[in-house]
Image 1 (tube, rainbow, N blue to C red):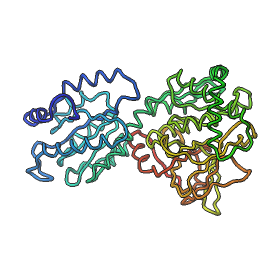
Image 2: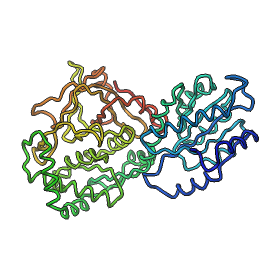
Image 3: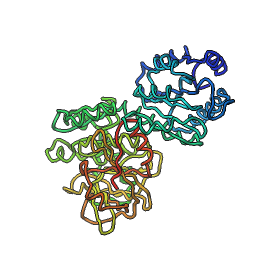
Image 4: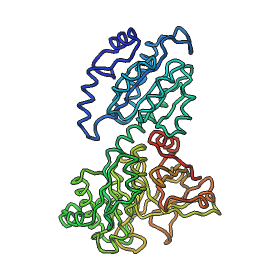
Length: 470
């Protein structure tokens, strides 16, 4: 049973007899209890609702509504096991007329999304009020169910947070379940941003408002105090393991790597103190001003390898981009400075910070060399050899309301003294279009895999536009 304390048989015998919506008393108690918890370990809660007019015509006049719902219930149980995130389906009400809606709508609370099933035609009077709640809503429309899929496009153009899946395969719901989970986790995210300026820009408050996350601005004093307290022996052990795992170490010495690991220990302590897993630092300015004792490049490698998030240069739009796509894909992002070559129709992505586990925390590491930070030949950075032939997604929030996205394929890891330490050449569809339509600031983020379809769905459910750059 996935809907609460009443048995499904008792629920549907009562509901079908009354011909109206009914709420679970046990469910209400569970909702109230979980509303008091903000733990990221609590399941993603998805309200399920079934819609069918009182006397079916389409798809057939003798439709067994209860049998249809039982079949879907079994499919949802299977999806719970496949999702990869803890998901709790709640509700399970059947609504049959517009008169049922006030009672149903009043009972919807503390959910991360709504999953609606139209079992017959003429469900618009029920579906439209559900969408108007403003909760991300997905309509799953099987072939020969209802025709309400045809109304969703207009709703999306009006800015409603709604998506439609028209499919005979229930596995096509898995991406939206993961999107619900990613958006829930995003709303729980607390980003630490270390920089000289402590006043939030309007674009940064827009990010907080759009995605429900929290950004805390701070200077370097707290991090530096934790660095001074970092255990030298622990840092040395971590440094030796990091050196042993590298294919080579070129510019830095062991002491440089130990200092980088001390900063990593300080970053971990800072995150733990503030209840965060996401951090971005004005590293270039901070190091140049002597506000930082070491570059955080290695700390970011370690964080991103572990499923947490470290992003370069106090770049909050890039940080939120990584939050969204890493929570969706389970893979870290690689922040890059793109280098466009229209002659070869390629884009080279270069930076001195990269995860080595680009397939996620449980994956094997890509080969890496230990290098200095390229722009001043100081500190410690990594040169990662990414997988040739790997399809990638390139993404960046131009602002809180627009996500820029494209795809490519890694064809080379160029060497040479120009550009940052990690460099990957990607073959793209139209480098010239990217060059002449470019916007949204320099940085872009690379993620292994093609996530365009999922990000478009996420945009429709979270209320941001997705623009394909290439």
